[in-house]
Structure formats: structure tokens, C-alpha cells
Amino acid sequence: MARLNVNPTRMVLTSLKKRLKVATRGHKLMKDKRDELMKQFLELARQNKALREEVEKLLNEVYGNFTIASAVMSSQMLEEALMYPKQGVAIEVGVKNVMSVNVPVFDFKTESSDTSNIYPYGFASTSGELDGAIARLSEVFPTMLKLAAMEKEASLLAEEIEKTRRRVNALEYVMIPQLEETIKYIKMKLDENERGNQTRLMKVKDMMLQQAIQEKIAVDEEQLREFKQKEAGANPKQK
Image 1 (cartoon, rainbow, N blue to C red):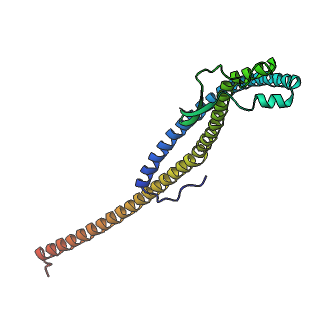
Image 2: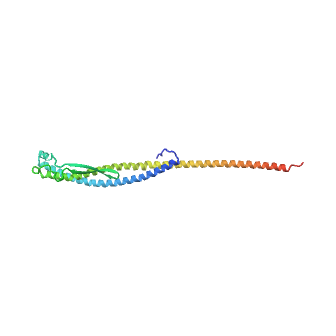
């Protein structure tokens, strides 16, 4: 792993140690977030599967009733019966936060206060299967909205899981190893510099000690010469 291009100083070492500490904690938090997102995503997928099966079952009943109705009624009568809907629906979109992800929440309101008033035709000229199909559609509509919100939530959670996974991998396999390698390099350089300084100090100390010894020897020799000269002056040789 390539290290960072920094100056090997103690100040940089302290800064990198702080960054490594933050990166390590961030990695743990991101990993916990990824695991929790995965847990919620799997639970959501299970609910989504069950709800989709329910919607498909209801829609099959609706299609079956429409098929029977189209068989017993002429296409013109069927189109006229469904041409002008009697009930209107307004969709309201809200949001909720799931692990820092804003997911949509769908709700609806009918234009008429009487929610059972959904048949835009008279019962005399239509078949009972058409009534059943429209009633089933009215029942399945809220479930379809819930399914749509759930699938959108699953899609957003999947995107967030992928982003979090990439961040976890970037911290685990790139940033943290780079910081550790750089810290190791700076420590080695500082230790090397310290050993070099100690070697130089020992060499200077030896040189100073050698110089002191030589000065001491010179002083002692000078004192010895002076002593001999004094001895020679005090005891002159007799002829």
C-alpha cells in the first residue's frame, strides 16, 4: 500500500494519528450502518414479496371479472360505462427517514366523501362481473400504493447500502492502510534521525573528551617542566 507523501515530522505524526483514530471510528460506524441497512432491507424485501403476491392475486381477480364482463357485454357498452369516472383520487406524497435515507410515503384522498360511490354507471345495463371488478380495483388501490412506496424504499435503501459499502471498503482497504503505513514510515524516520543524533552526540563527546585529555596532558607537562626548572635553580651543580 502506497504511503502518503508527507514530511516525516512529529507534528505530522500527531496529525496522522488523529486522522487514523477518526477513520477507524468512522469505519466502525459505517460498518454498523451498513449492517443495519442490510437487516432492514432484507425485512423490507420479505414484506414486499408478500405484498406483491397479495396484489397480484387481487389483480388476477380483477382481470378475470373484466374478462367475463367484456364477454357478456359489448365493447361499446363497456366503454360507455367506464368513460366518465364518478370518483376522483388525489395522491399525497410524504417522506420518512430510515437510517438517514428519505423514503416516500404515499397516501390518497377521494374527491367524494362517500368512498363507496365508485360506480360511474347504472346497474341495469351492466353485468355483475363489472361491478365486482371495479369493487376489487377500489380495494386493491391502497395496497398498490403501499407496494409502490415499499418498492421505492427498497430501491433507495439498496442505493444507500451500495454507497455505504463503497465507503467502508475505501476506509478499510485504502485510507486506514495508507495512514498506518505513513505513520510507520514516519516513526522509522524519526527513530533513524534520533539514532543519528545520538551517534553524532557520542562522537562530539568523544572528541571533546579527547581534547580535554590532551589539554590535561599539556598542562601536566608544562607543570612538570616548571617544577624541574625550579628544582634545578634551587640545587645548582657544584664544580
